Length: 98
Image (cartoon, rainbow, N blue to C red):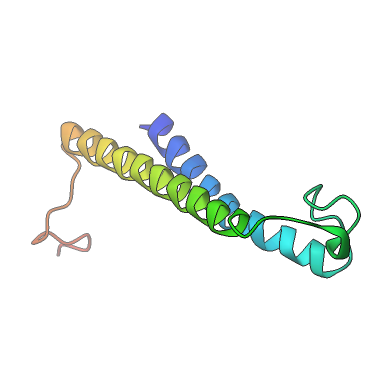
C-alpha cells in the first residue's frame, strides 16, 4: 500500500512538472533569457516554424493524458488494496459513528 501511495505522489508531481515547466520557460524567454536552451541567443534571434507551437501543445497534452491515465490506474489499485484489507468506509458509514 505504501508503494502505491508513493507512486500516486510521484504521478501527481509529474503532472505538476509537465504543467509548470512550459510556463517557466516562457518566463525565462520574456525576461531576456534563452528559454532553458530553446533559443540560444534570446527571443529576438529565435526562428521557428509555424507548427512548432501546436506540435509542442499536442505533445504536452498527450503526455498529460498518459500521466492522468497512470494516476487513474494507481488510484484503482489503491482502492482495490483498501477493499482487500476490509478497511473501506462505505457511503452509509461515517467515521464518527456514534
